Image (cartoon, rainbow, N blue to C red; front, top):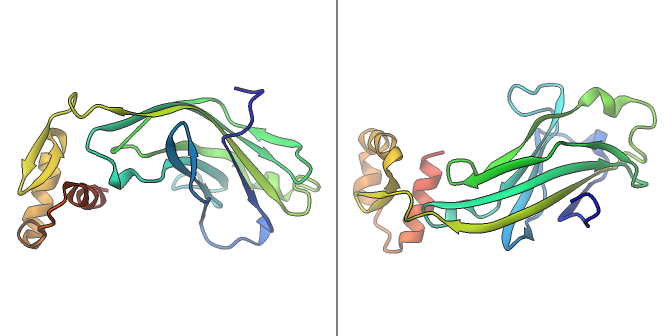
Length: 191
């Protein structure tokens, strides 16, 4: 994959001035799938002091139960003139409803960005290279169960039961007619 054109290029101007914890890229398509990058400026959870990089499925809450995407990917960090600053290892992951994002929690120590001349003109460029990504329909491989009109995986029954016990109004009052809306709603609740 090294001689290929990147699947997506994300340019962050004024990198050192960015406030907040996370920057998300625009949505892009690769391999027939929609993705976005999530860049954690101060690290994600236990990665304090590091830049964290994640590739995330953009429309995961609208996909059918049982969807899966298997891909290989890696990130390359560049400065303004295109000099490679860092390259992650190859990530070989299966993205699914339970894991819609994968990446590198400790991609690069933040101290590197403080070094003289590391970034030119305070601009960071992140390229992602993706191989694969077609949606696999595994809905027949994973059985779903109907709970109050919601289709959930058998492995999620206990969690959904707990949600409905703690919030009975969800089970009784939420009555959309489209299964896609129910699926998206349940995916949000299960996060």
